[in-house]
Amino acid sequence: MLGSVKQYKMKKSETAEELAEMQARLIDLANAVKAAKIPVIITIDGWASAGKGSQIAKLIKYMDPRFYKVKPIRIPNEQEKRKPWMHRYWTKLPGKGEFLILDGSWFADTVKSYRYGTIDKEGYKHRIDDVNTLERQLRDDGYLIIKFFLHITQDEQKRRVKALAADEVTKWRVSDHDFENLKRYDKIFKKYDKTLELTNTDSAPWHIIPANDKLTAQVEILRTVTESIEAACSAKEKGILCTLPPQFPTIKYKPQKFKLVKTKKLAEIDMDRSLTDEEYRKQLKKYQHRLFELQNICYQKKIPVIVAYEGWDAGGKGGNIKRLASALDPRGYEVKPIAAPEPSELARHYLWRFWNRLENDGHFTIFDRTWYGRVMVEPIEKITPQERADMAYLEINEFEQQLSDWGAVIFKFWINIDKDEQYRRFKERENTPSKQWKITDEDWRNREKWDEYEKAVDRMIKLTSTEFAPWTVIEGNDKKYARIKALKTICDRLEQEINKD
Image (cartoon, rainbow, N blue to C red):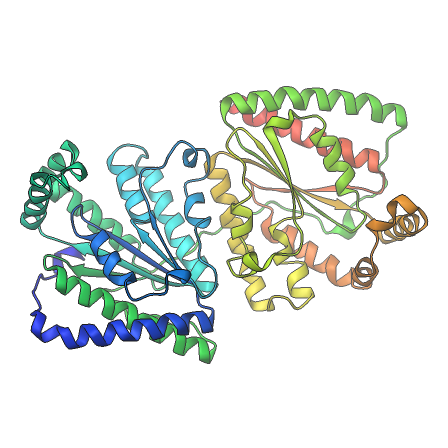
């Protein structure tokens, strides 16, 4: 790809009129993006000293500063290293009608991590998959992604680095490392070129900009941005997704296929499980003590633990979570209750709010309701079109795979009760003043859709029970049995994961 890019120089007199026209169009297009509620991500990557900062400054000069953010991407700090590598990109996502401009991106992060030995060859391959996955997920959700790589020749890079080093104002920007890299231009060229090729997809094709001449680069960037936004706004009116014709042939990117664990339907689960009060007290003490010990080992080994609770209304999730949390050191866990999304959350990809809620490695993140609302509640309640919800099964498996690659041990519990037991608990709540706040008209309305929800849950469990994140259905008619089964499941699997080391 890079080898086919020819450097050329535009004359200022010939481009002045076009440049002014594009700058004026960009002002109007920014308003059109806001009106169409299209989230836009523009990434600026390229060689050191290629002019990324100055080109970003020229680009945003004619944009409304209320609706864009510029984020420089540098070497991850210590806090960022304690999260999945993609975490810092997900948490920066723009809302609908907003622009995010990245000075460096997941592309530079991947190449530099491989070059400097932070990741090995296998890790590099995984990151390429993660990049293509991220861009496809965002594109499917309506994001417009415009990716630039500013390309300069070796001689031009050498000239610019020396000029920066000779200037008292800019010499701080140049290190010995930069001069060393000048000697490795050919090797870096090959790695850049290969990574560009592997991430040049239909979802987010690359635009390689000849940047030896700064004016030429500015014109090409503005032209691409304005044309891309015009195409996206026009496509949005027609209800379709659209990108410009790619500059280079795109790769045939195929999403990963996941090996699924065989599961049972809810109707096939034997619900006749219970414990006596004495059995419950003994086992509760045993497993809570063991879990406290395991939490300390996880903290020392920096193993993140994700516990996700789903289940029927009145299934006992709260009581189950309470017994889990009371076993843990409060400094090492946090419970994340998930309610209806806030406006800022609705304005972004549905997984954004879950990426934002992840605790550091070595900590427990406990979700009371989860990302699975996307495939249960949302299509049934007509919040999300069925076609879009169907895409979430793959997206969720990919999300959980990235958590697993981070090192997380993932538990997913469906707290199951039968319809008669739910009715009994609903009536108990209605007749108990201290519990009346727990029962709403919506609970009764959802109960009328029991059969519809049961089919959705069966499908959810079947399509998302992977080897790295299997579902555990907990027989919940007896709350004591349900609490012990959850604690035992967590203890047994954590012991297995810890002993792998």
